[in-house]
Length: 275
Image (cartoon, rainbow, N blue to C red; front, side, top):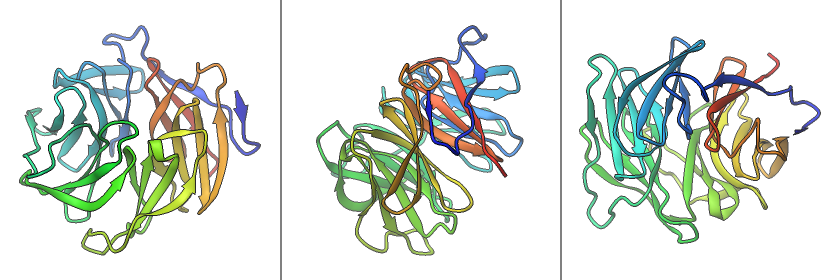
C-alpha cells in the first residue's frame, strides 16, 4: 500500500465475504442519519449495514450502481435493467422511478444525486469511449429531462461543493474531474470545465469534505485520490496488490471517517481522518 504522508492507514471497515447475506461486490456506499451504511449489490440487492450486522432490505434483481439517500427514500441506479428505483424507507416498497425521456433512452444510469428542490440528478454514462449527453434530471413525480446538453466521456460519480453551487463530475474515460456552476434553484449556470485532470487513473466516485477537498475513488489502478484545489491531484492511497483497496468506486464520509466501496471484493474500506 502506497500512502500519502498525511494519509492514515486504511482498514477493513466491514468484511462481507462470509457475512450472511454476503456483501455482493458493492459499487456504492451512502450513510444514513443514524450512521448506518447502505450499499447495493451486483444481484440488485439493497443492503443496510449497522456495526457488524448486514441486512438485505430489498432487491431489484438487476445490478446496482450508485445510490442516493433522501429523508424518506433511497434511490438506486440499475445497470442491468437499466433504470432508476425508489425504496420507500417507511413502507419498504420498492418501485421503478424513471420515465422515458424523449430522444434519450437510458443506457447506463450510474449515479443519482439529490437536487436542492428535491429532484434527482442522474449520470447516464453510456458506453466507454463514446461521449454522450449524460446528465439527466428527474422531478419528484419521476418525470425526466436532459439537465445538461453537453457530451461527457462516461459521466460517473457526482458530488456537490459545500455551498451546492458547483457540481463535480467524475468523467471516467475523460480522465478528469469536471465541474459546472449551478444556480440556486439547481440549474446549470455555465459550461462544463476541467477541475482536475487524472491521467492514468479511471475515476469513479467523489466525496467532498466540509472544506471543499475532493476525495476520488479510482477504479483502475486501485487508488483513492485527493484534490485539495483545482488542478492539484494527490495520490492519497494506492494499493498495488488490489486487496485492501480493490477497484474502489464510490465513497462517502461518516463524520471524520472516509468509507470506500470496493467493486472488486466483498468489503468496505475505512480511513479515519484527523478532525
